[in-house]
Image (cartoon, rainbow, N blue to C red; front, side, top):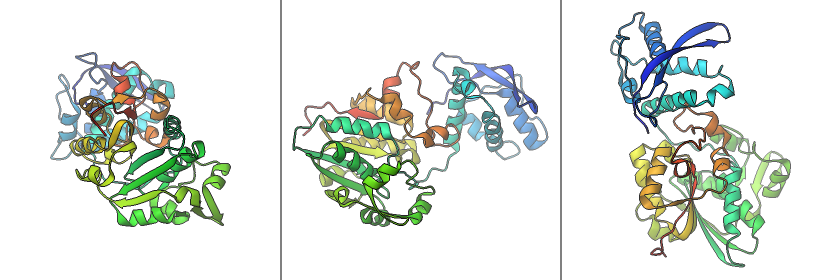
Length: 367
């Protein structure tokens, strides 16, 4: 999470002709630094919130941490400031939002959101949630010898949508393989639900959205046996799965599961504090066999980049941008939610390590 500060100059936005805001657009001290903290909009926010200007506008140097900790009359104006920015943001054309200055400002806003967030786990998911990631798993499975065994571990497997999506993808492409999958989750109730493999409107209520919404009509017929609105996973997709109660951060996990050819850790590390997420990801990495693959999405990018570099993981460039943009829900939530995913940018010097969601483990000492 970047916490650099910025200095400011001014420009004008007009929101559909209704109101003109003077927004200070910064020039950063360093080319790599985050930019675009709007001084006058911040002052305007404070004025609207308190009824008076209480900050000297002649010198205003802010980091996201300072903004998160700012107190006016004993209270934080950050919430109002973010709400005001969100209202302006939705009126900006896509081309403006994707421009470097506004994207950089969005990164600043997202850092502030993350600093203020009360992170918690969610069970929300979809079948075939990220199609490009599944396609890369299919391509990895094509590398296996005829009739060989492919070991897959899915951590934080939730209600099973990701587990069955992976098995449908791999077994459809390689029916000759013996796919052995271990699904791990910290909730016994959720594991039992996933093992039953029965989904209906109650399942949609559990995750807060229809888990079928990203499936085509043909895919629904290939994956499920339908009885009215009730869908049951077909038997050929239920075979070879071990449902295990466990914690991805547990150091004993490698002893319980053994080396895996593919390890999947999707959409739960972002709900942990960054330090905890980093430690957990290091532990997860121990599960991957030599020349195996780890798929990691739904994680703070700074955390994933640091761990991948520290452990020498090799970024997989194939489909890198497609996978990054493959889950439209997390892309749409940026920069307003802590799990939101920033736009892909090849202009960064570290873009391969930062945006890769799949890595190859090259360690001859591993089993």
